[in-house]
Image 1 (tube, rainbow, N blue to C red):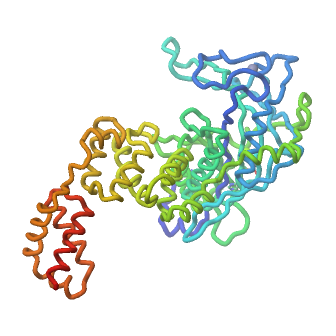
Image 2 (image 1 turned 90 degrees about the horizontal axis):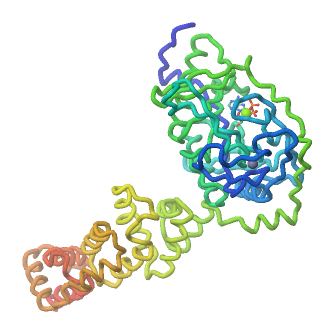
Image 3 (image 1 turned 30 degrees about the vertical axis):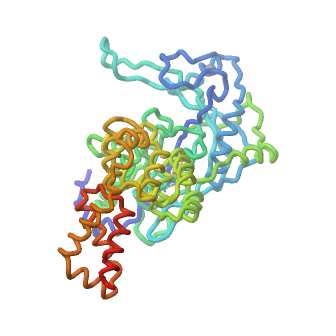
Length: 495
Ligand code: ADP
Ligand code: MG
Ligand code: ZN
């Protein structure tokens, strides 16, 4: 083997990566795709099994209607064309976690084709094509660890066997690990919005295999690809791809050839290892599944499924920007999950100033949640609480400083905003005009230059004076009242 040459940025720049992703998404049906066994995660091993999913001879599969509807909904959300007729096929291979000796999948007639996901690219967006979305059953799980009596023992849990999956295959349109990351982020977001999967990577509800090749820039033909399997986070997929790109280029620069193979990524070492090469590649001997009829999702059924399509993240952001006068960045943050967007919208509609609600979510809520490692669902301050706090600031009943303190107390006491606000006794703020007038006089006397500027027409100086008086009142002044008092003083002195 040739020694690996040093890959400089210059050498890297000579090559263009080509990436295509295969994503498996577990559909949230209560029962498996071809039998009535439960799909529940974490049950005792081999407790959710029956002759069908154990592959007993003579047992016949019966297709789960809900799995078809979920996969079709996902396909529609990804802009795919749904094929009225699709065919289940047997994919034959031997593996201990596959009791039947074949997986029921779809091959040359998949459920849906020709979709796309838009990802941000440069100043605009770029479409990544989706070749196909098909239905298939999951295999079981081999467990290699946790056997104190025998370190090299492997056990099989067949609870997962027959759990419905949608496989989503992208076109080789992705050109960098960053684009791969974006594609996966968008894909997950869209699937989550449809509600057909929880996309929980730790529990294996979303799995991704990454295909990667490189070619000299300007060359039309693709290079030889390798496939990186079983990477369990989007960050690691990005890192695995970065590593693979450098490895490919290293091999080619040294005069070698990339072997088409499946590789595994080791996150601890930050590198990939060959798993099986093309010589050992499977010949799956696909053929139509004789125990199942062609799947027909006719127009009427498609219409019915389409009616359940939610407003998708991109469209929702666009609408929210217009409806609430928020920025693209605000909309991006507030639609991070469908639940957050739903909660924000119902709170914002009730609030006096939706933009202020959006600001407070970002400035006061999310940072505190992150610091405490809490999810939105665990937040002591609800979105309705944020809206009520926004209204209090809006009407001038509390100052920004008081608001911050109250949020701190909410998080300390694990109580929602209105409750803490009540506990702390409502307006502690000074409505004592004479005290505020005294403070205003002091501030005006102490800042003659600014007074001159204000009186010369620089009305924006008002903010400076209000700020100084608020500060002098230690945040206890009612901002609206302070504003009135200061304006009166400044204008009054002019006559
Ligand atoms: P296979 O038959 O080896 O599974 P497919 O043609 O089904 O290959 O493609 C699998 C995935 O690999 C798809 O996402 C596709 O976009 C991607 N792909 C195909 N050819 C290449 C290539 N040369 N480089 C990178 N990705 C590729
Ligand atoms: Mg493949
Ligand atoms: Zn079963």
